[in-house]
Image (spheres, one colour):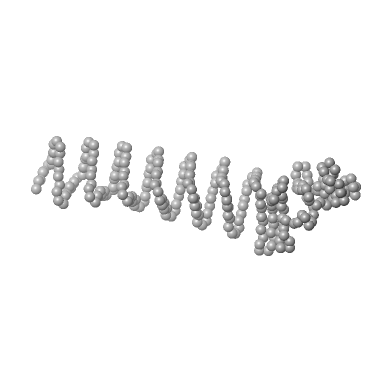
Length: 276
């Protein structure tokens, strides 16, 4: 600290070190603001003793102007620091008390760390909530417990790049209304277990070109009343060993020509055989 009447060059050895009064002070607790080089401070003397000076405050002057522009921003209360050394900005806590324009502003010049020993509750009574990350990554890590999202209205998620979901346990998705899935590319589903699709109504599979069903062992098609197979041009049925058709009545009819041919033996058997 250097007094105005001290004309000698100030240095750490000549300038006295003086305690600074704070708003509150205790053992390891309280408020702490250390005046910076160039700040103008107010000195008091304990019990009027000139050997016991005490910094009781700081004041603005023509060089050190207020952080708020006056009188335009006279409704603002500001707590602003300056990065050291030779910093051009710093951290800031600002209160705007202008009627109908009240605002609480918090600025971190670099990093911001919030640490809570128990619960955190944030309530926005009216208006909107906006989180903007101009550049970087965002991570939410729930190490123990569950995460719940409730939206009374609509919800939209737009992802420009790729998106990955990984569930180490079960995954359940319940939709009370309609569900629509639109894919511009290819849909691939790989399942190590079984796939089961149950519908109370109709199930329709439609392909613009080819629809193929392949099974490693058995493939079964079963209908409660009627099963129809229809092709616009040609319908082929082929088996490596044997084809069986069994029913009380089997009808085979061709509008033009029907050919029955066997490479070895053709057997027609019935209690009554009629050839017309």
